[in-house]
Image 1 (cartoon, helix red, strand yellow):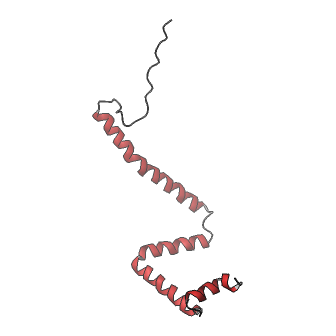
Image 2: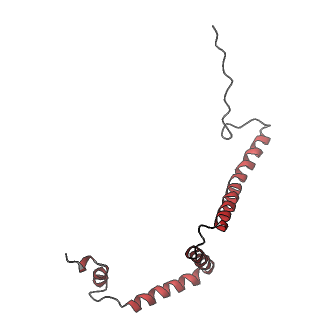
Length: 116
């Protein structure tokens, strides 16, 4: 195996039947793929562009980013835990305040007295 056989150009030449694909054709192919992606998912493409620009612009380690992360975590926890807590409260209210067997915190039983 020669050095060219293990290179990217060698693999590309084998894939295209011995002749490497010109860079202009590769660029046109990537450009058309990207255009199709933007047409199929315009909001996602805009969001990705904003995110890449924010990261490349040096916005990762800023106060704004830490505030956004804090807000995202707060909202995520609130929306993830709130329905579960509401369900548990509704179950407790329906059972007359007694915890059900399937949910809720584990209630330890009272210790038995030792008889001597």
